[in-house]
Length: 188
Image 1 (cartoon, rainbow, N blue to C red):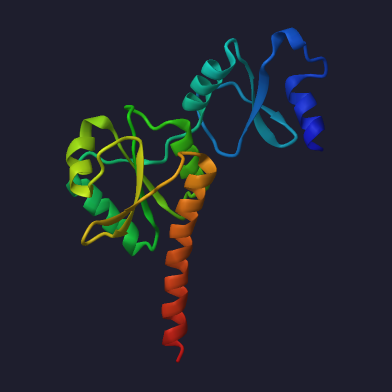
Image 2: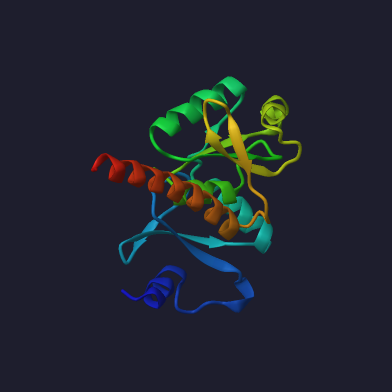
């Protein structure tokens, strides 16, 4: 089934322009809280937005699963970072200004599931953790470069998905190259 055929089947042939925006949401993961139907082998939710940006954001906040780790203390941060360093995954921390991760953080977590670990620090725990890691404003993103010394590199740039994705991917590639180099040297 072609993408246009899937959309027509999910949203309907006759789209009433008076009732826009309307979207069909295709989920690659299983989730709860929505009425799904099958279209072309995909799980689909039809969604009608009343106030486009606000409704769509609220819908996405509910539907995208949160796979991030909530970090409440510096001890939790250290334990979490050491665990993922042993697993040879970058540890990325988002300092957020809300009590729950925004859709952007959830989407990045899904993009890097099993490849990088995403931790979240909310305002309730942000002060003490931020002080130790020298983070003074939110939002902020850091990569833990060394879990033992808690050396971090702060993301610098606009908080856009593409920029954050490149930052995390660079950290992932750095670990892969390091592992490849140590493997190559052991072959000698």
